Length: 255
Image 1 (cartoon, rainbow, N blue to C red):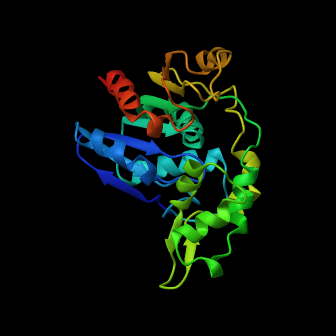
Image 2 (cartoon, rainbow, N blue to C red):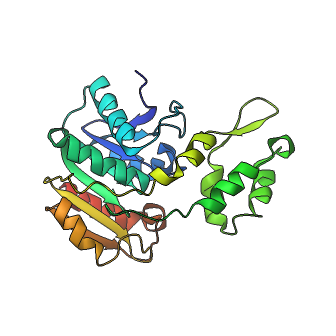
C-alpha cells in the first residue's frame, strides 16, 4: 500500500489540506503555517499523481478518498478537520460522506457537488507542449507556456510543478499523461446518494462563479448542516487572493 506524501507542521488537532487539480500541498504553505501556529497539526497532502506523491494509472475520486483513509489509518489520525479546494474539495466531500465518523469538521473551498464541464484543455495542451530540452530556466518554461496561457498567475501556479530532475534537465512533478487521460473524471458530480450530516463550511470566491446561488439547493441536500460564505475580492483561488478573510472564516468555523 502506498501512502501519500505530506508536509506536517505544528501540533494539536489533525487538520488535513487537499489541493486542487495540477496543484500540490505546498500551495497551502503560507496558510498552513498560520493554522499550525494556532493549535493545529497541519497536514499539507499531495494527492496521487501530484507533487511528491506516488504515480498511478488509477485516478478518480473513489481512489483519492481511499488514499485519505489509508493516510489517516497509517498515521492513526481520527476526528480530523478536512479542507479541500476545487478537486480536493470533491475528494473531501466524498471522504466525509463515506467515513463520517472520521471527520470532526469539513471545509470545502470553491466547489459544489455538481458536475463541471471540462475547462483545462489549454492548460493541458500548454503543459504537454513544454520542450524540456530547451528549458534551462523557469523563465524559458514560462515563455513556452505563454503561447497557450496568457494569465501570468495561472502560469506561475503551474510552474510550481517544475523541478530539476537532473543537474541539466527539468521535469514536471505531476503525472501529466494520466491526468490528461482521466480529465473527464475531475469534473464529475458527487453521487446524490452521498450525504454528510456533520458540520460543514462551504467558502466561495465572490468573483469565481464555481458556486452559484442555485447550487445552494444541492449543497443543502447533501450537506444539511452546511453554511455557505463568500470570500470578497476573490476568484477561484480564494485562499491565495484573500488569505486573511479566508483564514478568519475558517477560524471562526473551527472555534
